[in-house]
Each structure stands twice: as structure tokens, then as C-alpha cells.
Length: 317
Image 1: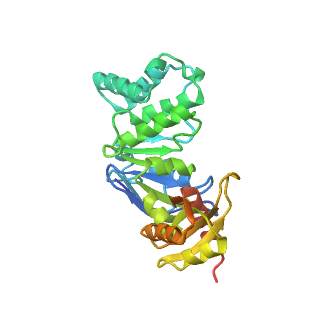
Image 2 (image 1 turned 120 degrees about the vertical axis):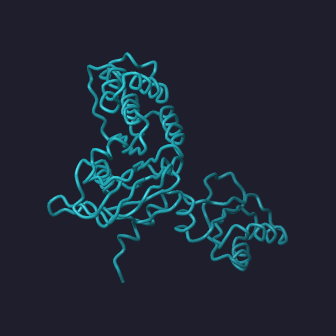
Image 3 (image 1 turned 90 degrees about the vertical axis):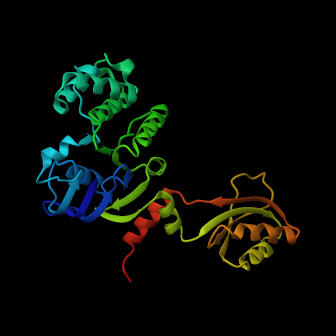
């Protein structure tokens, strides 16, 4: 549903995007992840037809965004990073106005407005003037207008920005519920957000794609080894030597404990896969040491993103 083919974008002499390529399949929720200034918003604006790429080609819902912009926009819903609303209009009036742009029949417009008011938790705010709404509710209104007329493709630029915790949970559930029915491209600099909502992640920095995979796949690939955190009461050097001698273990790292009242010593065991946990437990027990904790550790997207950006910035040998 979305195809980005070798897209480069210049603003004068400044290159914002460089040879960016990826796709989003029908019904898939894909997260575009990167820090502020990484090129996310530039890419979003190209995808929605606000301006063309300097080089490359973009297809949305089968339409070239440069050659068939009008046809593409009929199938597209868009929530920009900064939602611009009319402060003197009520929520219902604004959505009705937006629906008139997208739907021709009056009965269909009314049905669509009622649907998005309910889906976005805005029914009790329908008569409120938008100038009196909180940031979170303005964000919901922006999403509601993007969902009008059930677009085939939905592009969301930082959709959860400014939401309180309860609104954040509701927004995540709403976006997850679109999976399988609507193709969604979601941009964010909030790493946990992407991991919880998206089927696949595209990581971008300084206008280039650094990685593309599922959150789980990225974690497995970039971590380079499975980590298991254990707490053992026994002689530290002997424990480390015994664990390092196990087949499949690449290293054992001593780690400080967060709580001072816990007995034993914390270690992180790096191994090729999770199957080594059985051997870890067996070794500790057979040596007569006390095994007080054994937990697998999954690298978070925060750590993965830091690793990727460091690798990108590292000078070539």
C-alpha cells in the first residue's frame, strides 16, 4: 500500500533524506522511528503529497504521489504533527466540514462523523468549541478527521504527543485496532510507543534508514547475544569461571544490584540462545551455590537505537 523507492530530498544545499526505500503492506502497522531532526516529518510530507521528492518515487494506495496526487488523497487519512483546528468551531461542526470534503452524500457524512466521534472518545465533546479543548482532545479531533470515510492508508505523525496517560492508552488501543483493516504508517521518537503498537519498525537517522525489522527481530539481531540475568550466592570468581565454561556462553559480566538488602551477586550471562538457562541452573545447584534469581533479559528499543546511531557515527577504519 505504501512504496518508497530511493527517495532523496534536498532543501537548497541541505540534504534531508538520502536514498530512502521501504514499503508498508496492506493492513500492516509500521513505525517510523527516529529522533527529532532525523527526516521523519519530511518523509511524511512527501508521502502525503505536500511536496515532491528531489529524487525517487513514492506510491500510496497504488497511486504516484506526484502524478496522481488527487486520487491518492482520496484514499489517505493524515494526522500532522501539529494539528491546526478552527478554535471557534465545535468539534461536530469541524468534523462535518471535513466530511463534506471527503464524502458526497449527506447521510454518509453524518454516519462518518458519528462513527469517529465514538471511536475517538469525543462524543461527549461534540458541542465544545475546539479553542477550549486540551492538547489531548485536540489531538483526538485531529485523528478523528484523519479517520473520516475509512481511508485505506493512514499516516500519523507523532499521534500521541501531548496526551496524558489515560489518553495515551486509549490512542494505542485505537491504533492497534486499525491493524488488518487499514494500512498505518506511524512516526514517533518515543521508542516504547512503536514497540507496543507496530508490527514492524523502520529506524531512520540523519535522513537514512538504519534498520528495518519487527521489534523482536531488531532486538535479537542487534543484541548479538541472548542475555540472562542471574543472582547467585557463592564465590564470585568461581561462579564466573564455571559459567564461562558452559557451552554456548560467550561472556559473564558482573552487575551491581539495585537493592542493597539483596544477598548474592548479580551476573549477566551472554549466550547464543535461551537453552543455556537450564545448564546455568544445573551448574549453580550442583556446585552447592544458591540460585536466587534467573531471568531472561530483552534489550529495549532505546538501547538498540543508541547502538545503531553509534555505529552510524563511528568513522570507517
